[in-house]
Image (spheres, rainbow, N blue to C red):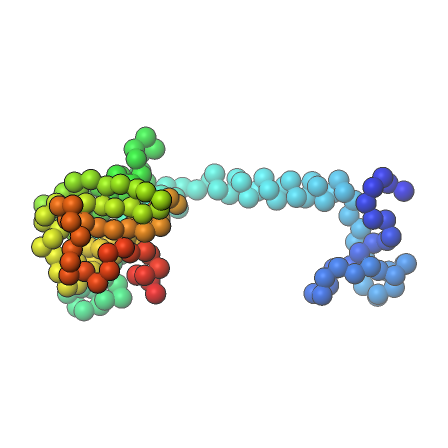
Length: 193
């Protein structure tokens, strides 16, 4: 017999798991006995296909979703579609946080879409510490209230929490928290739940 392993006979796979077949396949089903080399080759082929599937992505399938205000939905009170995502790729040499923040502030490509941030807002600074991304915008951001503030906050949070290292986002204006905001730290789960 081959070296090592369990050699008590072929195995059948059922919904209840693996069980031993009686000698001669006494369970009435077909018993397939794969050798170790065949199983290893199959696993190697599956691993290779899995890795190649990730490498073959086109620009449309990779990148980040950047969330923009859908003006048509907001004007018609279609809150469910108030934010729409566009897929963007970042310059590999750029910092991803800075790149995504620039895209959130920029005007989108799509029709009826606009940045959820007010015109003239600028990024003062950002810091990332233990999963908390603090983004400090200029005073123009502080002019937002109601649905406009909500959409701007959500646009920033949904876009930036795609980064593995960002779990929570806190948005400040001129270095200060907005006192009229319900909560200061936001996660993507807060928004979609």
